[in-house]
Image (tube, rainbow, N blue to C red; front, side, top):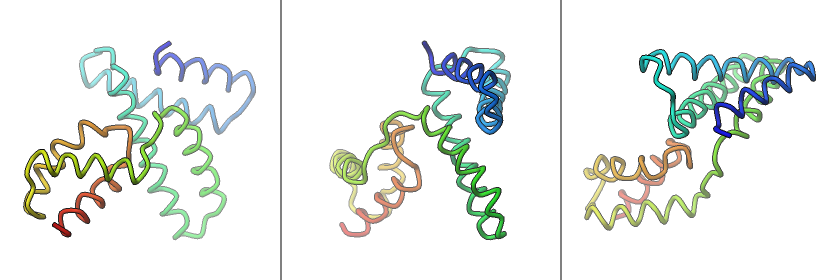
Length: 150
């Protein structure tokens, strides 16, 4: 069963269980997937494209949590955290900081990076390898840290 089909099945279960937050999160996700398919002229999305959409939705939830915490809205923070947990279940296993660091060091060695000026080369090679497996901000932070210390 594909990831998109799994989301649909889970939505049906959430509707039967009358789980309104889960229904809402999954409907928004399916809507984002559907909109992406429309943008690509109704081409069926593959797993990696669906994972990218889920990652974008997760990023939106994290940004909302930060904004609601600053606005002192604990009720909305809880709702967004619940949706974040629901969406996170569909992401592949995330890499640890150590695993990301090892991948970054390998890419730095393979492209022959000498300093922070070579960050674009490193990120260009690294992002396709780690897409969906690690947070882009964390990857960026590790690359910056390692290139500064060269």
